[in-house]
Image 1: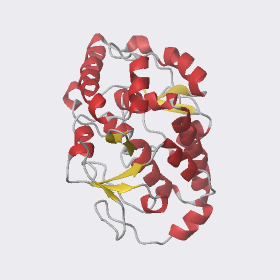
Image 2 (image 1 turned 90 degrees about the horizontal axis):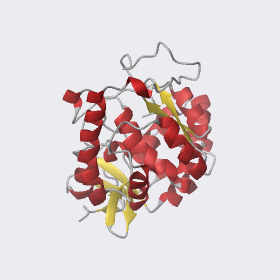
Image 3 (image 1 turned 135 degrees about the horizontal axis):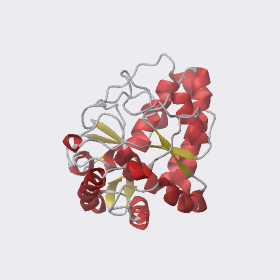
Image 4 (image 1 turned 120 degrees about the vertical axis):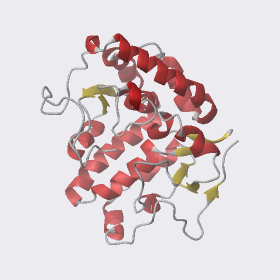
Length: 279
């Protein structure tokens, strides 16, 4: 999520700069790591046409990164031209403020290490596959790219106001686990879903989870789970709805929600608009 962890973060932090960035050192990836990348990519590439939003799919195809772990510098030349964003290599999870600083300045942190083969189906912390395959394609979408920068700026303010947890829930239920309405039905745009072999079909097709229409204040007081499929997803109308939601000053929202009762991960409130499973 934003990078805080209850255990020592994975990754080599010994050579990082003051802004928590490192060199990607692409030449150090082994043939075995590139082979694992190809396996991970092939699994998800077979699923995303069925369950991902069209904006994501178009950018993923254009990136053409199926054969090897991508070089961030090569991607940056295209990304900067498209939306003014750049990828920065990081050793792993970042402290909240460092993470927000990067987003606020249109820099997206991408972890440099890749999971082990035995972690093919599940990994606790985000690796380069999650970060790149899940997040980077939508950085080419201008509206979503602007939303992510607005989120970073809002995060810096939330940090000063002691409201990080509220904003973290917004990131979780949008950037990581968000769903979107499309002409083909409900589709995924959240990176945590798009990079998961199991949760991608589940979030769209399963009758088990609740799919609730986007509600900013509801999201900011809804708990989530980090070690299972989500019990609740929030569905946006389009990316413009996300950007419009982050336009106002959140300070009154924080004041309104401070001390409010939190909503459980699978709880439904009266009057909520629910979406059924997709085709």
